[in-house]
Image 1 (cartoon, one colour):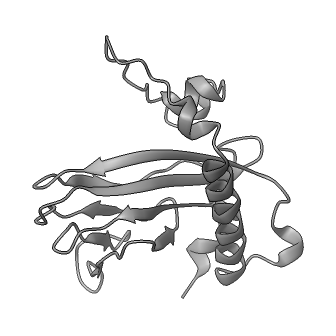
Image 2: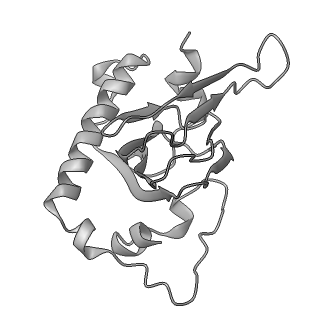
Image 3: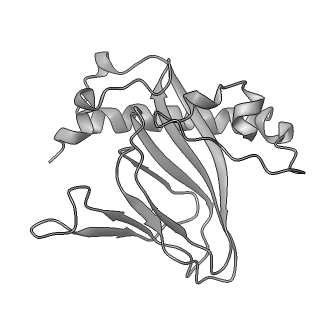
Length: 181
């Protein structure tokens, strides 16, 4: 809601599935100190650069990569013993990812699951142990979760989703990440 309110993004533009963002009474949903800062602008610029490199890596020709994106950034904090359940987004976006601001030793792992299901010959998983300062970018549809944070500090990430300029409008048939081998 902070992102949605600050940038005046219609709630329906946040997902292609019509999910509603909950609004908890008493929570102000503002953070102008972050969103108006030069650090936030710099982070957004770096994430756009990373997004372009990612898109080239997965098969987009440089001329087909949009000049501008709609990029949504939010903060997630995983406290000690906290976790994130499996999620797979079906939004029409190019990619999603996380920038690990604080990744304590013994903290959560990012586990990617095989989108084709659990039965052989599929069903493999890939684990990443994040490091502070690392960015992980992946197809927006890639199923993933965070294991319990067994460290003694919170894990802090800036999460992001990158869409075409007009929002979640990328047709899955045009998504080059489905062709990566």
